[in-house]
Picture 1 (cartoon, rainbow, N blue to C red):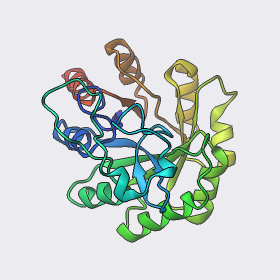
Picture 2: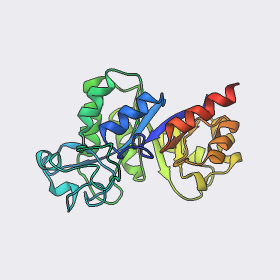
Picture 3: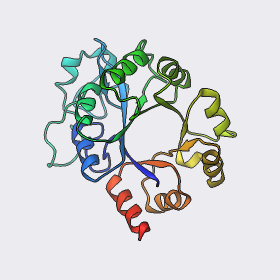
Length: 244
């Protein structure tokens, strides 16, 4: 069965990377969530996509320059145009993990360290995974492939997956060379035959970001391992309709 991974939570309907978006992903019965992590000035792992807080909050500046206490004062849905949402905070990864204790969702953690260098990020993330015993529920991905290899060396039980956005020759071979069990390509960068060949070689394929019905149908019909979408409810209903 093709798994449905909720991109930044249910980002098409709720403020991205907030607890409310993750709650919604659980409510609509997604199989997992995808989120992004950065480090604050005082070393807390926080869930936010951009290196700055400007786009998604009412603050200004780099995440790395905020303390955790100060970044939590920001309004994480400040630019989300809906009266349904009041003040959403920037959550910590620990807060997400605490919530995950009450469900069985998978969690794809994207390390946002391909632009900003966050020394010690890999160790901090792995240590938190150990603390909660989530080794079999976490997938670590990044455009920084050195970083995911570092995570594998720290904890081989945690799955790693390289993110990439352009054509990659025989990506299953590349994934195997990293000790990765999956690839996370941009949907535009992966053909049907590549998806099939990768899966035939034991490498899961989870394209991003799949929001159009025809894109979802293509991947469901192929039996693709999973896909990442802003609209998990729409994806789940489409998957259910195909079962009939």
